Length: 313
Image 1 (cartoon, one colour):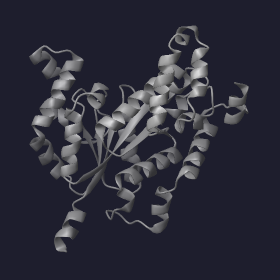
Image 2 (cartoon, rainbow, N blue to C red):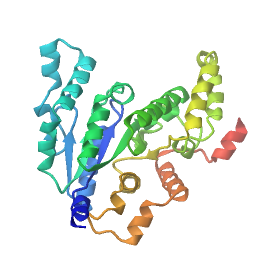
Image 3 (spheres, rainbow, N blue to C red):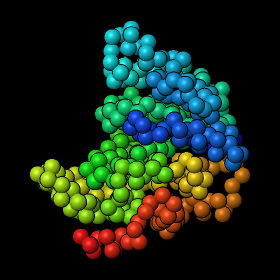
């Protein structure tokens, strides 16, 4: 009985923050660290990106102390992509160093700020193996996959983002929360064709294909786009939580989704009550309300509902 209690208290929760370059991973880690600290959680950030310099947050463990991208590129005459792949393989081969560093922060919540190279999460296995080893060390992690929200304004890029998100989810094999970041800039590169919930819930993509067909360049690729959309919808795994790090309510919605994904809301590391547990376990109605709140702040809908937009087609 005592051994079971010891195993329960040794659990450590956290997030692995992934996503393409420029999606806001480091900004997210800084904002989430500050936000959770205000909530009373003891949180540390682990920089897993050997190319990160001038970190804006307080970093408890910096992988650059083990391997730095500049040194790898200079010493092995590799480019940035090859150097980053080698660096993560080097980290995988020296996990004892990482384990010793993490042991110094045994009672904390962890944010792992990961590299942005997409191949690391879709084709290469080093990062996946590192995550698997963390699980063996009693880490309960959720993958937080950030995607720049302005891709919603371009149907072709949005379908590409969906394919990347799906491939990442299947390859990484962790509880997954996809996030549309920088919601305050969502219409910077163009207005959305539909209301925001169409993109967060990834509704019937045939309407998006109709928009692509109107573009002469993409018209000849209609069959290809149609098959890509079918793959995404057949798996039915991809959905998004909208986020603006300056918006406290938006941060709360994201944190609730992540706490539900990694099981933190059902753990015993901080005081929790039934109301907190239920708020993290709400389903579609909660998600719809949170998306609607973000849409009212950052998206000009022009007075049309999603159904009206679809009828116009």
